[in-house]
Length: 281
Image (tube, rainbow, N blue to C red; front, side, top):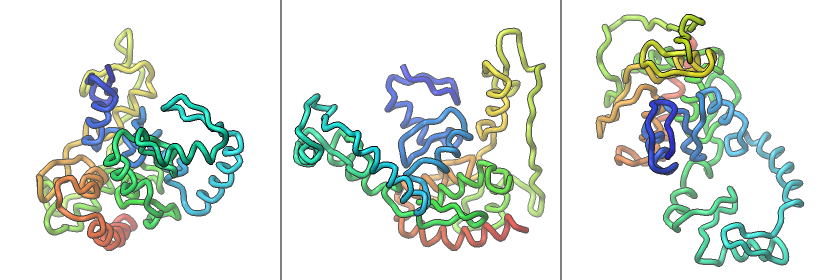
């Protein structure tokens, strides 16, 4: 059984768990790499440090390091448990065998040709075309910029400030869930849990009563989006999201057909410019 630590649910397989996490914008999941993290801090560190998310200069440096590592690579096909004379023979096998749907850029095997095609057209293979409006970091998708800023590591801007800035843009068709008084200000709240949260055996969240082994883990939980209200909705399928990054990931995936990715890119470029001006006010 695979366990979701964010909402305390069990799933029959890791694949089912990952499918669940992809649909939740309050779960620290990287769709580009299909990886689940324990905290949003871990996800943001991954977004900053992983080779597939690095800027061009960093990628070149990583590539040279990877070239050195290639010298130690052994010509073994793990899937077939078969050795080859050299790496060239191994690569030929991976490219030609019907048993493999191999991505040479990522060194990953996929179950079907369709899965490989979907992966090849995913953001992981796109260029770093999007620059954060507040720092020099570059990303492959607009949602990655939003996630980066929402994490609080970029100039200490909070996700509440990001949400308020996006709401103030009054985007048409509307993506905001209307429940606020016009002209009101967003109150940015940070929670700090003390030792009084210890119930005798563990540290307990007073909102959902989940328990954690350490005070730090409870503080990370209480300040994550898990207890936030839904703020955004897809104009087409009406699915609701707590964070604008979750809505953007949904639109980028093209699952409900609201827009093709190129349209999303063009729209995001103008949106990021307006959005950054609001955050700097």
